[in-house]
Image 1: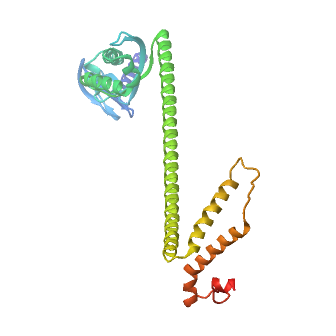
Image 2: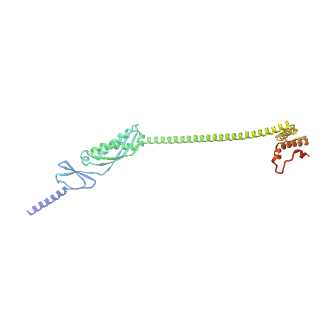
Image 3: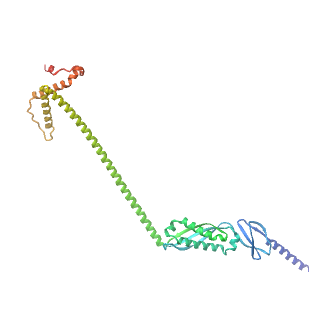
Length: 326
């Protein structure tokens, strides 16, 4: 009898301990627990210490409320221009409502994977291959928008979707490589042609400037030469005027000046001829000296009169020709 009572007491103690254990729930940080009573959802337990009715209430789901990473398996996608590419990716999502994530969808992770894969095919199938390779940010944004809207009723927030790899077929990769090489060769040819063109332009500009400067120099030289000739002509005209006045006054020495001047010029031309080696001059020395004397006399009368009136030379007054002869 005593042994029977002892067994009953032990059973009752064990039952009390099990009841207490089942009635105390501690929820860790980052998780939410959903509670059912007789199979019906009644509440969600937040992180911390909680007491439930044992044997009547039970924990139906322990929902992870932290952001989670979902690997999207690789799949083949046909683009709008009928190119077959292999694509995989990764998605980040977070449960924001544990009850909805538990009761609105069955197998949440499996549903998320299929949802992302389906929308990847939809978005990338509406684009050309070149767009797929160069507009990844646009692809990610479009897929994220669609998937986040679809997963909203499940109490899930999709925070980010990234396309990891886009792998075209090998033959298409080779064709793209050849296209890239051709494009680079085209750029190099264009740059080389531009360089040759620019060089030709610069060379032409240089030749143009050189010709302009040469023409300017020739113009300046011609102007200087004309100016010199003008001054020489003015000097000759002045000399002719002085001699003409002397001739008009009956001065025979003026005639001697012209004769001697032309005579000396003729001798100069003969002596400077390139084919002239020996010059025979049957000349009368007294006639030449007389002509030079006549020139000296005219010069003294034309320019020396002013000196006698008030412009003495460095050695004193200029003597007259007649005085020299005396």
